[in-house]
Length: 245
Image 1: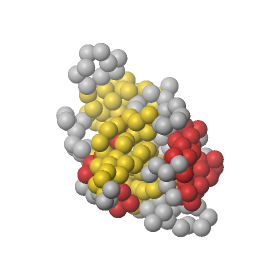
Image 2 (image 1 turned 180 degrees about the vertical axis):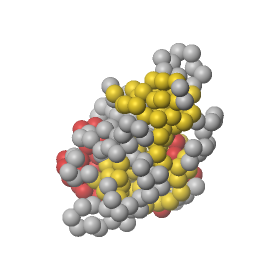
Image 3 (image 1 turned 60 degrees about the vertical axis):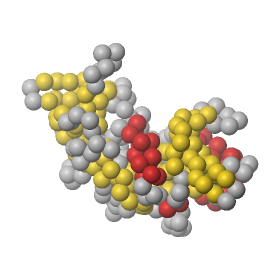
Image 4 (image 1 turned 135 degrees about the horizontal axis):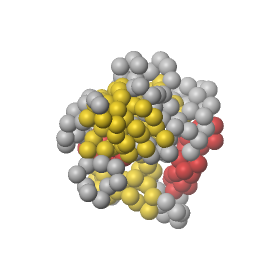
């Protein structure tokens, strides 16, 4: 995924009200939309370098959108959670996710059967009996702890837990379901549930793996001109440290 226009570089002043960020660009102070509902653990420290994209849509209240941040280590992280669905679609098209080999994303924003809410993608692939479908939920990952470990979520998320429970229910009813974590940073080698942040979610994820829900991860390389999915990485459960593969 390439950015359509060059990004604007600046220095983060503060992130506030969840969806807003003040950024100093040269001698100009801009208020940008922050497209991330999480805590942005480790990614929203005042003074960090950030990059913004610009929209020409006159109906938007804030024309600028926060896309990237450079950490103290120099690692670039994509903070725009809305990019993850398209990135996973690219990964599927390039067969970068072995657990979902052969599947293609055919329709987005799928109503959850028998419940409120939506999943991100309906996938399909050819099989001996015709066409096989899979309901896919995508989660964006921007937080990491140490030794190449990314964590999700970065704040308590009842919505994320509910999605996992629905994936389990539908899988048990005979529907193929999957969860893919999209890691928008290049310095990690595996993904773990953030047990100390949201133990309820960690339990739900372990239940999903045990039930047979497909759980996978994809890592992206980040630059100021593009974000590209490049490598499948394992999702590891704490305690037994067994990967999902």
